[in-house]
Amino acid sequence: MSNQPNCCTPLTVAPLDVAVAVDGAAVFKALADPVRLRLLSLITSAGHEVCVCDLTGQFDVSAPTISHHLRVLREAGLVDCERRGTWVYYWSVPEKLDWMATLLATPVPVG
Amino acid sequence: MSNQPNCCTPLTVAPLDVAVAVDGAAVFKALADPVRLRLLSLITSAGHEVCVCDLTGQFDVSAPTISHHLRVLREAGLVDCERRGTWVYYWSVPEKLDWMATLLATPVPVG
DNA sequence: CTACTGTCTAGACGATCATCGAAACAAGCA
DNA sequence: TGCTTGTTTCGATGATCGTCTAGACAGTAG
Image (tube, rainbow over all chains, first blue to last red; front, side):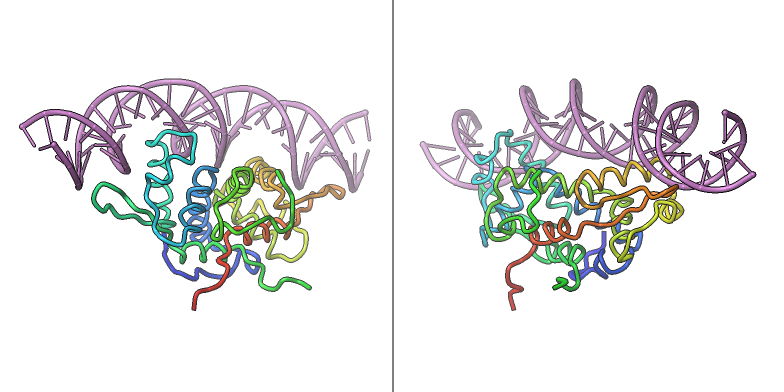
């Protein structure tokens, strides 16, 4: 999994290199679940780090399931985390979001 | 699955509504495969409709598998197609790409 | 009509995924 | 030391996914 902040040519401009497609698909897969998409949204839109304990209550799934989804987001490079005392805090990695937005971007909004 | 060209508030700005998260995850799932990502890239970057016969040769999978992936992209609203005579042509739906790009967009590139 | 090409559908198989309950681990407190 | 709470890991289960082969369907040309 490559890790450049600005990946490459957008998908709309030139055919994707196979390696980039593999990387991109892996990141999109991490977002291909409503729970994970909402988790990322909650963490990113907060603008600061978020405690896991503030996340679990907002979903109808068990705490281990939330932990699993957070791990998927983390392994995709979309969020990172740190334990401080009892609680674990998550924050988002904006470079990765930008990477994806660039991949999808249409170069010029045809007016 | 809602179909607005400009979906909503970006994921980075406010927590995603559950319904939007479900819709978004479904579309991301369609991109969560390297073959489909490259297919979409080939179709979109061409700038015009593309014959299936020009796509199958670029992958190491069978023609039915390509057809399956194209169907997934079509059912996600990312591409559309039409048969004309012997061949079937696919083109991309830019509104859907914009929808996703908006969902991921960071409102202001913090300078 | 028959033969042929291009594309899609149907059914099956192994692999991966989402979810859960149970248990382990980490940290604070008595 | 033990008890409690928050979080992650483990192992299992049912569902979904990617791919294949075989066959069906659409259209062209004899």
